[in-house]
Image (cartoon, rainbow over all chains, first blue to last red; front, side, top):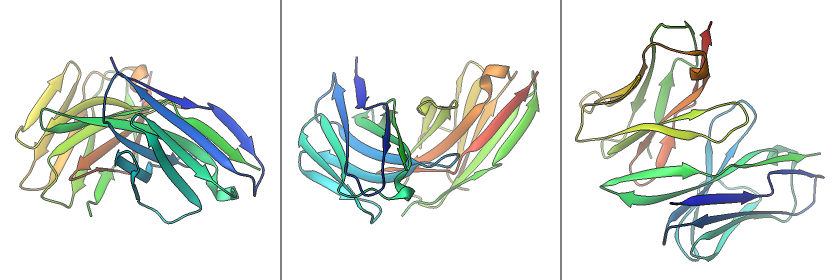
Length: 114
Length: 109
């Protein structure tokens, strides 16, 4: 069965510091991968999605970037965090199944920028 | 791009009653419509989905209906229980999922 991991689970960082969040998927090959951000009490904002290694699309212009150095690894980075970067960061994966695209979320990283 | 609207934003029901959440979408090319349940502090969990060639799907106490002509779909929860309290998100997919803003459901004991 497929499993998705994210780390760290929680993170407290000062404004202006760098960020690196990691997501890995097990049990599947060539997944579509996604990064979402959820502000407190809000909806799901798609940040990046990737259909393959080094193939990444950005949905929202911001101070964040994403990389996919391996098939099942997706990394979210920032050189300088802003207060507004606080939130719950969710990685997700999907594989085409029977004409649909079931998508599953990782456990998330809760980021607080102080 | 796809635009998904979800109503109501909050819903309070008595335990045992039914809950209905409605979503509309804009892109007629969308062909997959999942629903997610998110408990406080947890990840969204896929609870049911429907594809564009199906009008209704049931799984125990939950059901989803789809009207492609009107471009709307709904989640129905029957015999609600306290553990149904959560935020529910609908979504529609053309080439990626677009999510509604969420509905906070509270089941009163």
